[in-house]
Image 1 (cartoon, rainbow, N blue to C red):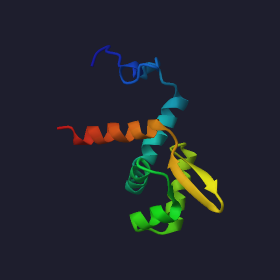
Image 2: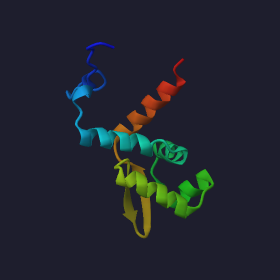
Image 3: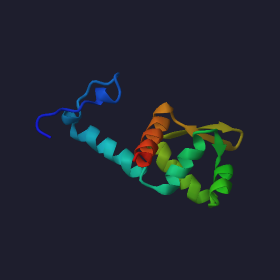
Image 4: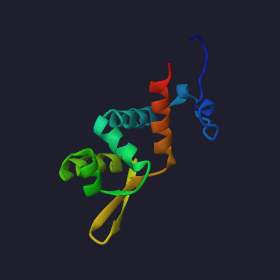
Length: 115
């Protein structure tokens, strides 16, 4: 490897922080995101939300899981700012927080599909 520096700018030109200069807090936040994404239920849930906004009951039906289990996973994803919700009456509608989530999913899928 030598002294080769790989910079975040190689992957995203709007960010100039080199990988070798990540501080402890930023490194921990990045690791936490990858831990959260390391759960198959959460990946399936995020994949559903890439196409449309959904209610907990619809997600639970689609994934054949209980609503309380889905609510728990959504809470984890919400705390990580990967999903957001809006209230419509008594119902909460969930969607991806922003396009970064889709990019993370796409990059991961491209990586595992690469041969």
